Image (cartoon, rainbow, N blue to C red; front, side):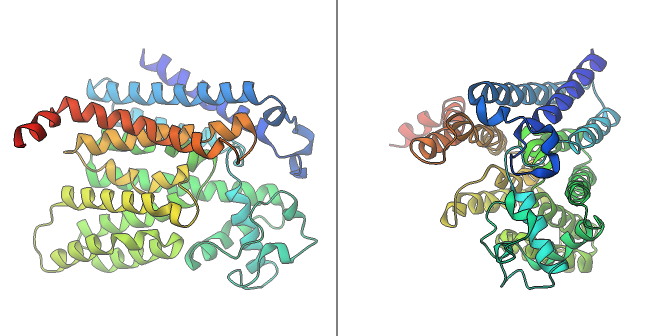
Length: 379
């Protein structure tokens, strides 16, 4: 049974890696020989396949969680699943749902090839650069922190000018950070349930391992900073926390929790890490909800709070909300995938699909815990 389940899951991963190449952009001339245009010409079919993939991922996800609960799979099995998930999806085309990885590369090129300041000079200013044919948002200066820009120099320079090698170097960096977050969640919790909650969460799998968003790098330094605090290595904790801020800035919202736990640690006081991670989850959820102030809520922003949710064991409500968002945010791609436009009814349906699962979860929690009885009894 276990071997059949794992084998079927590997087949799903291989199918996702294959399907991802149906989304190759017509301007992405590096893969012009395999361009099919299927994802853009057969929107109903591709939307159906995407929904099938997402539903399949969640079915496997809950099956793995159930098997852990029943002690039918162990830490060795989970390690294998995490390694296989990243190993197979490393080969997936990263611009299946988002073009952000191209922005990482072009921004790195501004600094490490053209030797210009990416916070002043936009990629589009290099009018003859071939990368501009398939890079979106090339008319913006660098959106990320200086540490991410420096980190991006590693995969860029090791690509030796070969774009496909650079592309998969970036994917490899993201895979390593994914492994790192999984490792530190295990080291902190010693609980394979916590590892699976994060590492095999379909949203994390899609947004980190397929789309290769750098949010996973930010969370690697965040989670590791708390790990070092737990181990009383306060110097490393401070350095890693600062580095997380200088990747994508958003972890600055965790400063109150970090300062409190840091102060308690240097005073050799007991830290309630369950509460620390709970409040960290809430703060990152607040940052998630505030994100539309800049643009909109993007699905990969859930990576901000999901690692902390995996470390909180006493709040089922928080877990249910996180899982509902994981599902709803992946559905957020469906309207554009089906309609082919970001305008008209697309924004409405994106928002509705994002929050409807959360709404139903809140209704479930409300009646399950009989909160309505408590409210009316007080009145």
